[in-house]
Length: 130
Image (cartoon, rainbow, N blue to C red):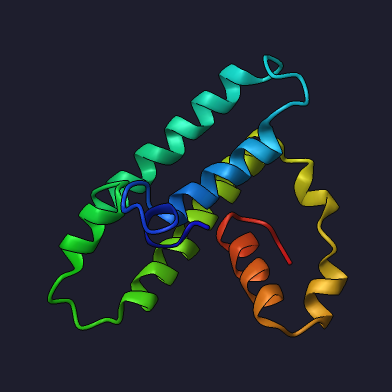
């Protein structure tokens, strides 16, 4: 549902939307008011980092900036998704460092897949030792 600016609406970049969803999931609370302020602050930090890195948060604007780029669209979106995930993971772990203790590093080191590779890379880039 997050591709092409959230289901082809061209607005919010899907990579950023997914990263924001993760921030809300890990930093939020079952109580709607419980951690609202901290989630808003963390989401704001993510938005600023993403816009600083890529120049915009809107898929339509990012796509226009990419016109004439020799790198295929999928690869550019995959790069944004990777970097947005790392940004989100670093923000989440800054607010909830205990989560890094719950990671199953034995599984990640044994399991060789795209997902485990992505997780290992993301955790390494956020400063976790694997």
